[in-house]
Length: 454
Picture 1: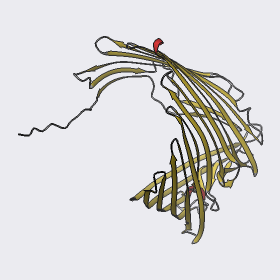
Picture 2: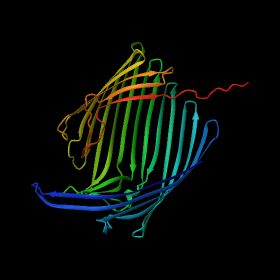
Picture 3: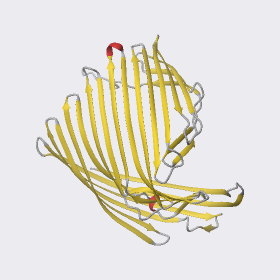
Picture 4: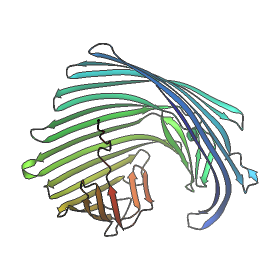
């Protein structure tokens, strides 16, 4: 049994000054909007929860596990938005209190016989949440009961391989920011409005996995496949006008699902001091959104291939790891592009053990992003790193290391994405080329002194 109290609070003051210029089809400016807002924000969340669990072996083959947990969360959100500290703007201000009560009961039984085991159980979640608008003196209450069954089948094929089948379901509650029906205006061209009618979503996930390691031949094989779908998924709704102004909100929709799979194989050749590995995976996801009152169905699919080649001795370790990813996106209401993009990377690494306990390493990472219908230029980057290190003292506990990062000075703070009817570019801060001298002392061992008895 345990008790889990939590408390979070935050306060901040914002001053927002925006100037938005609108242009006609000929590129001429036709109007200008100036917005000057002061925002006084305060948020607080208090929660307390408790959990009790009990496990009892009923027989040599049967085991029973039962548990109960309770958690209550009380959140408050206060936002005062004014125009030049004079007039309160009611449509942008709020004073909300959100109370969430959750009771969870769980029971699981497990049966074991020789190389096979099966466990199955049920988790029942009763949730009540209250949204209180303290300004308008109105309440919004909801009660939900969700049943979450789970099952796991495990079969040990032999001493080196096994097979498992799993199912689990889980619920996601809407957050206070998603349900409070007040406009959030940080950018005049982008506004967020909550939806107080949101319901919790529930996700079902099925998976199958296989693992096998053969010691005699030094080879490993694994496979994984999963399928999941969500009922009442909390999705975005968006209205975009002729001036590209967006008003975003949330709603519940069915139709979100995903499929993923992966196969990995590696093989060692001890006599040749060589190891080879290949990793092949894919995932595809179908998502629903609402765009200008029209349901938009998007599918994003990605295929990944990664291989590795490694040669190793006591003095030398060489590796080459190429990988490639192909992504394809499609939208039911038309796309801004064909949604296709390809990325391939290559990493070379070498580590050499030098005399006097010195170690030298160099790594070259090459990244290639060819141009596509969304981006008309290639994006190729080469990152070269290296270090020289040595270990001293009797137990080699002290390491002295000199490293240099991005020798070619090609690192860039840039990323781009293509999927369905979405394409995006983002820039971010990064640390440019640098040299670092470091000392690392590994504190390990037995620090208890032996006491002698006279």
